Image (tube, rainbow, N blue to C red):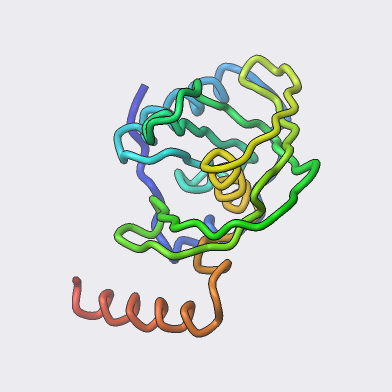
Length: 169
């Protein structure tokens, strides 16, 4: 296993819709292991394949690092079955270091995906897990948290980002 480079905004791969996984093979298993190690090293509660430069519909989530008791989730080709309610949650992103934003998400979700062995899973979630699922699936669809905030806040972020890039801070 190895720690992979996390792509940062404005990397193009972060804005592209990821391609479906077509084979659960040794190469994919290695990518899952590397993504898991990368997520823990960052540290984060989730990581999507586009964040490590791979445009595949694959994500890993482990919210147990935030106190919840839950095993590592490996999501291959996840799709939402249902979303309901609304919750505002302060989110960060490994591809937007040192930036957080309040993002409105569905309070409860139901998701269908395949696990690393190819078994189809349906999962209902609320709270932090529901937020993490939505955040990571957003990455697979080419969205970042800055795409989920108001246009005014997004412009403020972009100006601050451009200034930091110029000054190197």
